[in-house]
Amino acid sequence: MSQTPDFLDGNAAAGELQSVFGTDMTMASGRCRGCDEEMVLAQAHAYLGGPGMVLRCPGCEGVLMRLVRSPSQMWLDAGGLAYVQMPVPA
Image (cartoon, rainbow, N blue to C red; front, side, top):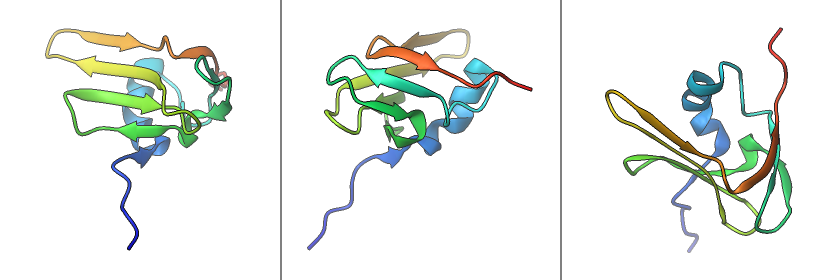
């Protein structure tokens, strides 16, 4: 019997990330601070069922990014990423 994962791929976070960064972030690349794995954000494991969004590393499951919104504010923590390299909008 196979288990269904409790996460989606990073594409599920595309709309939320685009609203923050103003560009498609699924093809942005980054490196996990925990295990040094490099990936595009579309490969991250997205957890969307809580009060915000959490992206985890597909290699070590370390937290890469957290985003939480309230009606008046937004909190973004990308401390799990050593860097993010994103395409420049045309």
